[in-house]
Image (cartoon, rainbow, N blue to C red; front, top):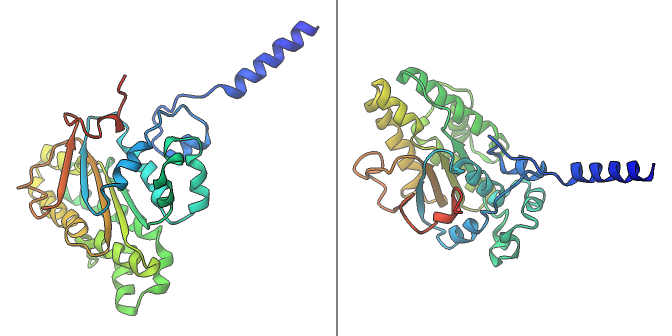
Length: 267
């Protein structure tokens, strides 16, 4: 009887300490709260803090943890729910860094374009409008700080109106957030190139590149409301193409040693 009791206790204990593998999980908060296995990449935050003021693009292969890393940045920097998000970093390397003081200090705009893989420009643009509308919806509280003209600009996108200025949607939102919080904004764009690759494959590349050149450049170039921009993708960008106007862009690929330990597994 005593043996069986001890056996049951060991089984209960093993269930309590057993961690799951985070297959397909790209939300840092979900991963941490569910106590999944996590390879600590928070030193990347400290390294990026030393590059505040820049716009950086990281190009890495699929399954290198790009979206999870960007989610981690969102939860670290985001001024909303600051105290709740601080708990997510307990026991991780960044907790012992002096840069932990920067946690929860900035409004964060985070979008991922990894699911925009349409077969024509009309459907692609529809998905972009939905994506941006949902982004604006998550910040609807800033409407209380806007004047009537600004409110109209916000609502045109919020209600997916045809006259909405979608090309400048990220820059406008950074202005609205700067006005509300009185501090500059961090913009995180995950899988920036997915809709562009799809456009190339399905024959509407020129329409897509025309839109995204303005969409990205207006947000990341000469944006006085921007504190920092971080982007991820698979392709190494040609500066004469989509980022022709972005002269402050630093690009790190899988071949660069710098930041190489921040993505994927190193051993």
